[in-house]
Image (cartoon, rainbow, N blue to C red; front, top):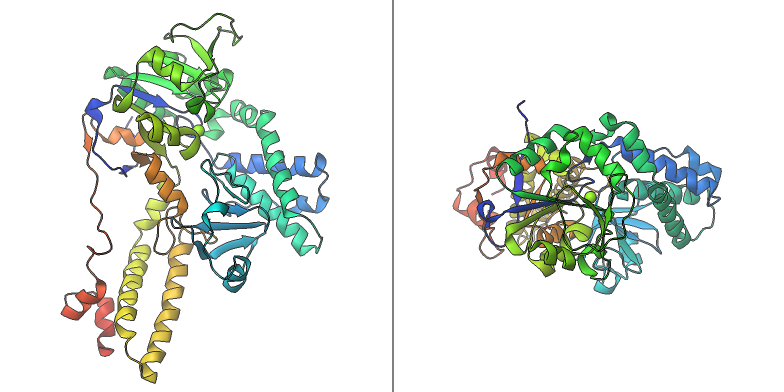
Length: 474
Ligand SMILES: [Mg+2]
């Protein structure tokens, strides 16, 4: 069967030569197994039910149904102010992307709320793993339903004019979402209807088969329980899926797995029952639980750049590996599939080209102070704002692209580039490359190296139809 798979993307400081990689490791949820969006709605509905029945929130919240594509991964939430927002790589809030409940907050109010600036001081931004005392960054697999439920509940209290504490609301929504996880609902739903929830299963099989038949060693480190992983892998890869893997670790408790060296490995028997024996080796065909990376490295000897680990969670899966242990890391970012489609539309390309050209014109024309020029400048500034809104809305009307604000990478993007050697929509992107392929870093121009639009404009080398339209102004 021919698979049509998306390409992957390179973001690294040094060359990555796949020929040197002998060992491939994988996370399970949203890495080997990609899930359909309908799972988000199920999580939302269950958490909303917990919020009302268990935490005694008003019945009125029931009328708020799940809103697909309201939220986007990587956003920040100000816990005390109850605001959801997008923050860029330099800790600036992107104007127009701040929401209280389901409604946008005007720019002037945002400035007032943050002491006259849209810059969020370092001590207020989320901590290393995305959880600060005042801000939380939403990164994990429950993020989308959690943000949507927070927005809905905030909206209910605000529009019903009921006094409430946003800090309590944040805690309770977070706990209600946690209950969906702890009580195992997600596992139950997926196991009941694998076909509905698991996407691209045959591609997962193709990747694993290709790696194993090229003599690569494979391992799995997941936080999910064995029965759940086993069922999904049997569905995607076949009943002999464990033959592909040299080491299988379940309920690993990442990110602690990567930075704690106390928890020993335990073995599970074929019924999934815990065994009491001391673990001296990690053997093929066995299932292990918990453990820690220090013991893993000791027992396998799999160190440094010959190991490539793939995961979807930038903090829980990749950060420690990249910063402390020198494994290669690959980030799975399913959102890329939609975002690259948008970037490749003609509408986006035209809007962006015109936006750049307009910025160049503004830069050049600002020195003219006569009333007519000032009027033109005002019109252009207005048009530029409209263009920005158009390009943003092509991705997500509320928050735009998860990767960039108008000019800068987002906070999410910066972390993505810091913690991953490669990033891709799904592991199936690996099928596009030979296993001896070398990825070379692309040189991106720095500000002082980039050609300026206005220079090109002056020398007349820009011949786009847009600029010829503007000729009368020059
Ligand atoms: Mg995962």
